[in-house]
Image 1 (cartoon, rainbow, N blue to C red):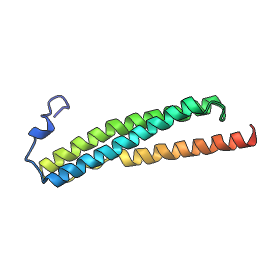
Image 2: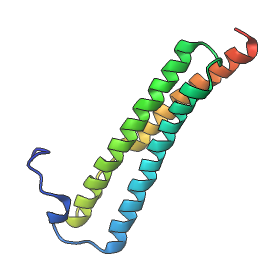
Image 3: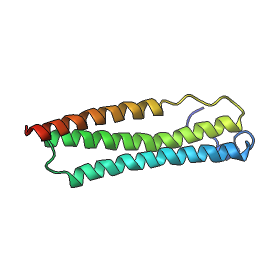
Image 4: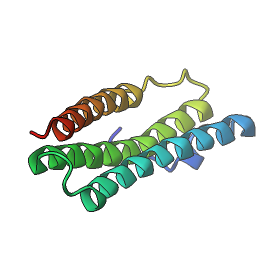
Length: 124
């Protein structure tokens, strides 16, 4: 079934225990907050830290943060929808690549930030 042909989530299956639906919603909101925090980090780096390391490197980190932010926000909704449908249809919960993506992206940002700090401290 294609994305366009899918029925709205509330029309699929039967209502699960409301506690599971609310837990799924809280998880969605936690992922959404993470996406907003990544966005805030990108904006802070772009607007507040102009003389910290080489500009191309700062721009690379900003772009990575923005891409991660968009991935997490969109992924949060997709994850919520897939989980809600599985709950409503009494199926096993789907596997989700979002945690691996965010860890990989965050690791890249941390390494790049460490290089920026090193360059700034060494005066290069």
